[in-house]
Image (cartoon, rainbow, N blue to C red; front, side, top):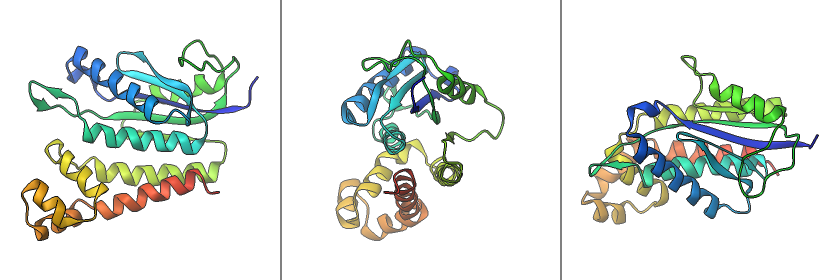
Length: 218
């Protein structure tokens, strides 16, 4: 049996409320982009296993965390669009360190077996009320607990975002120049700064930085 691997699985929350063909196409496009952007961090490429689920094996815990954060930003920067209007959806994630018994497939996350994959699948299948959207289960229980709490805070804030604000939110997260953002979105600088505070942009940036630090303390 191989050493523990960092397994990433996710599915679309309430996928039945979205048009199936367009959702599947959008998900596959995003997953393909994730594999291209982070080729050094993904050991077995993220692969859509069903129309609304995907899985992969990451090089490390830090690579898995960064991939999750990249996907979250991507869903806001390039959301699903149906009939000319954004139709946002959310992903439920499992990041688990567990054993894979078979060789790691370097081209597609298919055909692999092991208790780690079985456990990750069990966690993803648990959809009880109140289940965290981000589930972190790694061998270091203290770090796992801290990462879980940090992701819970991030989710609590981001779930309040409205799809019509996604582009503006991503601009605020990437740029500190409120004057420049104001010109881009036809807003006064003071209005941009008020929204920066009300959307808790600084808090999100700090939490994401904390999550990255916790995943790779070296």
